[in-house]
Amino acid sequence: MVAHIRELSTRRYQWLDETDFKNGLALCQSIPGATAMQTAAYVGLKVRGISGAFAAYLGFGLPAFLLMLILSFIYVRFSDLPRFISLFSGLQVIVVAIIISSVYSFGRNIANNYKSLIIALLSASVFWAGISPFMAIVGAGIAGMAFSRASASKGAVDSDMRTSAAKQVTMILISFLFCLAALYFLNSKLFDLGAVMLKIDIFAFGGGFASLPLMLHEIVMGRGWLNSETFMDGIALGQVTPGPIVITATFVGYLVYGLSGAVVATIAIFAPSFFMLVIVAPFFDRLKNSAYFLRAIDGVFASFVGLLLFVCFKFATTVPWDVARILLGLAALAALIRKVDILYIVLAGAVVSVFIL
Image (cartoon, rainbow, N blue to C red):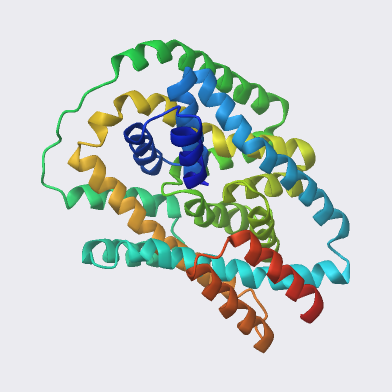
């Protein structure tokens, strides 16, 4: 998706030059949230300011939300049918393969750094011991900074962007906080759902997959809103949609509190990262020259390797493995490593599930 956004913004429409886009991508990879969503919003921010960022964010996420809403309705309505049972039994195997692939993708970047490997293993261990993954992420960031002895460098601040955006950001943020306060008094259950999704997005450094350990902890292990099997089904449906994997929040919200839950969960899972993007963008030149910031981000990224490793184990023990499922999982993993489009893998897995499993 990021590659397609780059093609549209730098070549087809020439909204940005290559340098602007690369700087924006570096920013989006350094703050929490789904990288592709953030990148689309960054393009909108550079072209049309805050309103452009919001329009790009909404335009990128709305189709995925609507499709996930339809799929969630179908799931609730027909999940007891034998075909649906076999379908999601097989798709759970695909989900395990996807998580293994993401562990490989994250882990490959830290394989040659023993400090990052230590952080990853410690993060997996503390999650295994029942300690909150949020604490593991904070600890990893502190450990990353401790490894750095360099002093922070000064960078330029985009004063024009900062001045023009400050009032708009403040107004939007105040309005959002007002809506949260109103939700607290009108429906405390929906507020709790929204607060959980807000917390997940704030800590989801490293893209959409980084949110999975946090969702697992909060939704399955902590509050018991869904069991592991149903949560895995939501991840599988999230891979069918064209948007980021965190759109699984729509599925969770719908199953817990219906349509209103889906709307609240979706807004909450995307709002913090949007605010971070528009607030941090003018100061990013200074941040990216800070050794402490970069080391902290490296530590946080390393922690997600360990957290995803735990998620992989948790999901793998949920699947009733047999020869057919093992072969399906290995085939899916091989296809993922060879960079086959994940949508084709999910759809092929669904067909195999219905007719074989």
